[in-house]
Image (cartoon, rainbow, N blue to C red; front, side, top):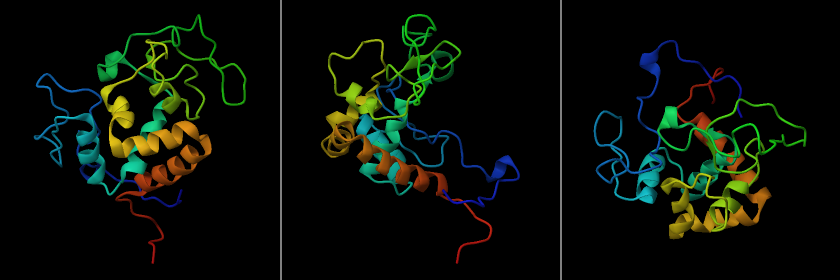
Length: 191
């Protein structure tokens, strides 16, 4: 990551809200919206919607799939996003011990739904879980997740990341840097 990113001074300098992808279709059966956002991104399929959202930022299929892998870490909260459960056996604080990457026990506030069993460890388990039909049904597998293995172009990368944690880490690091620096100004200015 580059240092020296210039912060905005007020909200008028921020991008419009509503530019993140939808994980599930809305009541009309489509993903995204054509109104109230900077770039209309309404689509009938989750893969088409992900492409519409991320291609406009200059990201490619590898980068879209790699960034989706961030779901290996963390949880979705029904009261915030409308998705997932209030809690699951992986997040209720009682039945599953959560460990950090270094193997030590992690204290956490219970709640939400996770994509992986060990949701405080950043690894490629998001991809191994998504592609496992016998994975615990309490783990999240949203439409925007499942399309990574259903779509021909995305599945090339999802399979590569499922089979190789180091490949995922390398692509994720590059993709996150690219996303983090999109539209940013730096001081001193770059030549």
